[in-house]
Length: 382
Ligand SMILES: *Cc1c(COP(=O)(O)O)cnc(C)c1O
Image 1 (cartoon, rainbow, N blue to C red):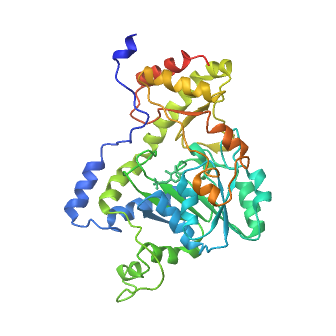
Image 2 (spheres, rainbow, N blue to C red):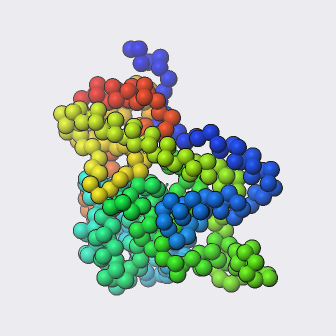
Image 3 (cartoon, rainbow, N blue to C red):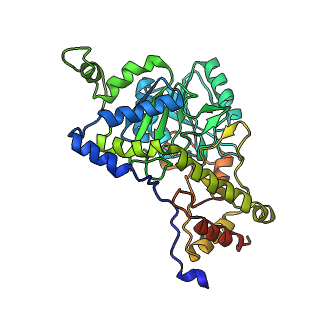
């Protein structure tokens, strides 16, 4: 077939806006390579202004932003936190590191987001936090989650690794919980290779966050000239990215509108052009509730059976189209079972992980290559 000679279409490619190397060169020339220099400041200011959050701290990863959140809540052994089983390990691991126990919640079949209807059964007097993940960039039902959390005096920490610049009733994702974690890993919409950001929406956390991020010292106050020497004041670690990474990231954040717009165009085209095929094939396309503007991070589909998914993946790879499935359930993982997770606890998660397939979606995916992906999908009949 003619497609056999065509080059392979990767599943994921990091966005490149053109300014990255210029900013990295400026950082090099400035001689300031460690953290919290002018590029870090500019990234943080951009996030604070565009999202309307109290304080943004760049971190070395999304995982580290979650670890900082767990640190700030002062979680201890005996505490519990609620996470979706269908997520990346860091959502649970960051809080478990402090000795707290994960309680796994199932997801909704339409959005694959934490099913808020199950929370009342999972909240106990030990629950300290709920950590919703806005899967694929579509908001969880945050009004319901925040209402319940408020009634039980439980903190809400958004894992917003997918959802930066998406919104919920017009409010930016990442500003809806007490704290939120963003990721700039190279599979995410905006990247510096490895990186993240913690957003502080409740100001009482700001001073402690600054100390935790600076090795348990008040060095940030010293740099601002507020004190004449800095010292060890609390437990902490080192969560600052280098200025080289912040410089790279600034270029991406400054071009966020173009990056997001390209994701949106590609996402909507998949959605429209695969509708008939999906309806005829028993395939479920993603649902975006009316109140949500997606970040368009992922285009996924749920195949009718595991066998159909396996065959579609083989079919697409034979046409040079690289695709991927996604998370394995946390509650039935080795660590999940150690924390009490069992088969049957999250039936929707257990079902959908075997059906899910993700299509290539990134700014460098050309219209022609997307057409090849769409044509190859439509050739397949489960
Ligand atoms: C990517 C991701 C993370 C972790 O981000 P890193 O920057 O890779 O540490 C956490 N949660 C979710 C849902 C993610 O997709």
